[in-house]
Image 1 (spheres, rainbow, N blue to C red):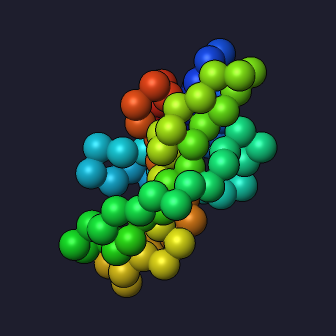
Image 2 (image 1 turned 60 degrees about the vertical axis):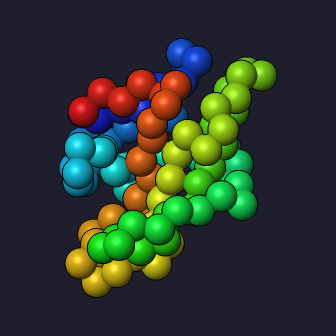
Length: 94
């Protein structure tokens, strides 16, 4: 069971994560999106496409741009479409 935890709260949990380039991607239905706020930030991966970011907020604590997803990935990365990955202060247990 893969989990993403921030400030003692489970943000996402799944038995079927997608593991890619050392990151754990959680399917959209496994993510508690009430803790996520979309930001204007983005980054470009040469082979996956444009990633968009979320800030994570739990009980007054915030981790800016600590989650990302690919809304329109390249065909090579289609299996992570809209899946969410975490980093920074978010602890991920693969």
